[in-house]
Length: 143
Image (cartoon, rainbow, N blue to C red; front, side, top):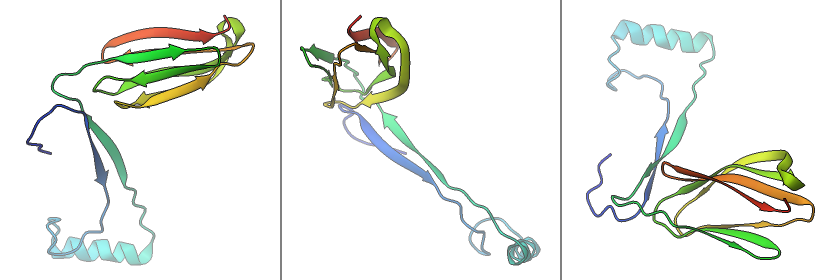
């Protein structure tokens, strides 16, 4: 992968690995005998093939983190105003005093994205804000 240009913003690339059945002359390096043996195996049984993929995140040359958290009587709004993705790790809903936490999730906030979470009576929520190497544990609601 090669990108020529300004690295002023975060970029995302999807990489996919898709299996293919070997064919002669298609640069698989199979001899004619190996090709016949492979084809005979296909006629006799079932071939299981699985593909997979990944998202590659390329951070900007000069990363700037700026996560803004606004809290009012009914909601907590978390906004990523920086230029690189931040992670809200172990985001969990809890009973008051941060006991009996459940539904642990991970949220990724890309630049410019906000997430809003309602405050509920008798409940609180907590998460770890991860900005690059820096981690900060935060909690909101009735404690």
